[in-house]
Image 1: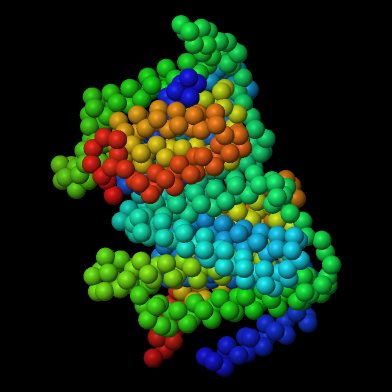
Image 2: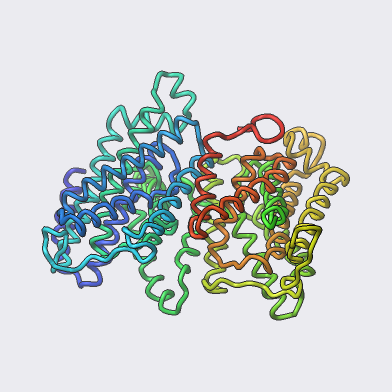
Length: 318
Length: 280
């Protein structure tokens, strides 16, 4: 297993040498959305708290790093951490309100959506943040400014982010913390009866998840060179974030990554062909259909199913 | 004043949502998007066939009844008994499809249906009222009363209420619960079909309008008590009034901010409902 893992890692590190620039972009997006999905997975998958407003953390992280860089000249490498911290603070506020006031299921979904939309409308109305037009980052190509002439740099950063989030999720899964989260997800009352402090662990999961997602905001902003409230805080981005782990398998370590490898190329192809004909929103229709299909036919997600399908012949051979 | 008149539509919309929740314990995340489809349907009927929305609302209600019936039969029905999260994801999927299908078919530009009534206005005592809003209000309230009569005076309506109160009991006495569920979802959707057509001359709409309508419906239904019909009706008037007061003091661009903040506050307080006990 370790062996296979090493091979995959070496292959991923060597891959940019043979990729065309379009394929490179595709891989950057696969890693980046996989990273966001993995960050969401910690609270949405492992802890089972369906946050449908994770775009808020991307927005807070991205805007923080961008404003610090534009106004104060602070390098986004530090701004990224500040953005992550502010996103974690927002996550803690949402988590506190949601968990303290006992908002479960549909109520928690509404709370997270409401916060993301409040952030979006607020930023749209703040002129210092560029209002509805947003902020633009001038390209200098200076690595200190989180800007690179060579697209491969973004590839390695996105890969590093994905690996980091996955390592954190793996560490959580292996520890007591992960077991507590699973217990809370399956039956919160029973977990509490056994002495698990559900509030504390849900809060922790939310803070870790929102911190990581906030880091992603900096990458997103500096990769695109622009920030608009609708793209960074909007519901479409929240959908992008949750759909990959759900399709791949929420609450599994490799689910978000598999989900991103399946969905990101599909989304890019549909954007390329359908977007050109002015059919914006077409890929969101596809996401909606996919969500319905997953709920009806593959509720546990693609990764657990894949594992079972692969395991079947082995068992039969014995 | 126009806030109160708009409240009739809000009430109708919320009664539909609360009916669906009360009967099936399913939150229709696509509620606002269904309403937008009612609006576009009224738009098509008005532009292609020249039917006034104050007539075509009946057609829109029937069309949305069919849509709701099919969503329940084809989708929600298959996952009864699945974890709650699955229902939420399913309905989010339906909402995504409906909103973006509208975006692809009708484009992002705000639209409004022309009706000769929309230009007229009359003095009612000391108050200047525009006729369209008045008619909308009266029809919306009348439809709510029709729904009331359906639920309390007809056999099918009584079965719907029975299934809502005690699904198992209804099954025991031989009710076709699947059919009742589909009817209830259909009726709930028909409410927004009619509501959508009725506001189409007053409220300029575009596909994303669905979200703000959904949020307004959630606000009302949670205030009124989930599943409580009377609560939804009165809550609709209240929320509409609160929103129009909010609009007086805030810039129009902040109106959305107001409804979402209202949602957060309502979620945290989660009142027992205006009438009756706390439903969790």
